[in-house]
Length: 117
Image 1: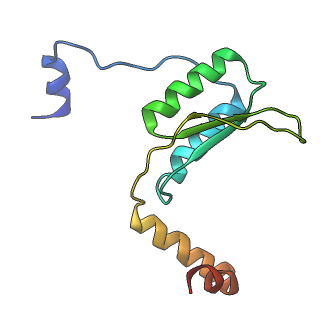
Image 2: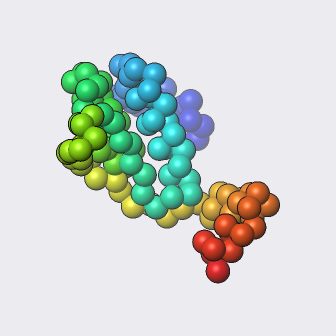
């Protein structure tokens, strides 16, 4: 059965997320999701100064995709980090892990040896 037929016969339309994030929040979230390919856990870390609306949307996206969310104040003496969403643990895709390791070895063999020996 094709995907199109499943949707034609479905009694409910799949949910669609609507809403917008500012550029920096969207880039941070997209980068964290991409890093999940070769990392066990990923976090987005944002200053608490982002708007409540953007924080709420980002928090919802992080929960849906298993990405952690940490907020902090901009005071360098007391950043007051707070975990809003804990990251879920994933098994990295070994294809991308090996590709990343291969690129690291080509770029900096010494660093590769320090990390993986």
